[in-house]
Length: 197
Length: 434
Image (cartoon, rainbow over the protein chains, first blue to last red):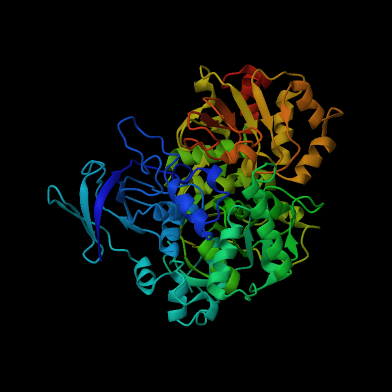
């Protein structure tokens, strides 16, 4: 699977309060209307630099960016699942970072909202916001579409089999941990939970 | 069988295995699942979607529901969210709902869990809040999880967990006067950084740690997440047992490190050399000593939260504020209703803490909750709504954490916060008290 689109570049230690400020935590992610609202507030708490465009343009509900490229410890702070949900609801598909905070990483896999991809090299200086990129999940590469430079990513590791199964609920059903989904949920109601870490 | 750490032993037992090693992925049994008003409604939504509308929680006695975040606000959705918890608890017959507006209401979940005896040595606690790690003070494996994982636990009683290696922090010698657990943990986070313990357990040990009260031990374990840690852990001793006596009748299953248990790192500190420590904006690892920040002028001070709003935190603040006046707006919020009562009952030289704080000119809310520690709805008591410079006993100082993005938050101990409130600039408490 590949993800193609514009890149939004961030630094180190982007915490969950910046990803979704606490004043919006009254919104419940499983209520569809509030899920969309969470998306419109994605990165609303970011301490932006003057030359940085907003992640979600004013007056819109979604982001024009497909991939965030960030530094170390992305998603640190709170365990609020609203954080990966807000980014995913805004239309973001992946975060490529040098490292992730543990709970955020797990919540990405659990919700199926985002692909959390680790990179062994620091890429925040190799991309600028609005650059085009191609993320190839099978090949574990991030390619700069303008220059053609290919950057290697770390494989998904322990998360791999769980993502491949479609989340922890699907993984647990596949491995016989829990029974088949209930009839009224419609079966494919969204995967869910990931491996630890 | 290989020697194990405390964390490994708890996870091995919960996984039904004789031994586990760091890096193993194991299904562990949950002893307690805690959720609150911010993450509970989403968790319940996923639980129903995945297990069906008629589904029952795996064990109603093990689900603990503690509304605490957005309670004293006019926000309609916040009230709706508490209603969702209330309806679910009624539908499922959950005995452990600490409901708003009833005598059972508690306030901040991590302190409430301890006060109500849900933090038991040797057990596994999952909670939909990153500061669930606080309960590691009680020799419990306790860690924060998201809504989806919590919904999974709610239906199955189990979760897939990767066993973390342990970093050990040993404090030797006696802690000097006016140094508190907050100074210890800010020292550690400054040393290892905000991702220095990612995927790891942090054990606190040594005679200085074992001399701490349970409240102070909770301050240590509370902030392991600020170093990225998965869980904090402290050995069980008579202090632990004494705290839990009368709060739980369940048998305690404490664990100790095996002789020869392996640690990823061991760091030793001479407690006698510690000084009042501060984390500057906007990161808990941006460390300085209080005495180095004399020139920082403040506009407000805040005492509250799971890490800095316990009864001992207020007693320590009152020692500084007794007979003094604050120079900046100083907001006080008790973490729980027990602490709220304690403000009236506890006295220093015959005067209640509440009266001491009133005399000092503090603004006190007796409504126990998370309040402005994480900003919250705009009408939250003590919320930063402009370019304030605040010194706070809370645990996070990310940009905008306590409200407005223009705000600056310095983290410090209750002694340092109180001393700084008196002078209006960051102040080493020894300057006032020695």
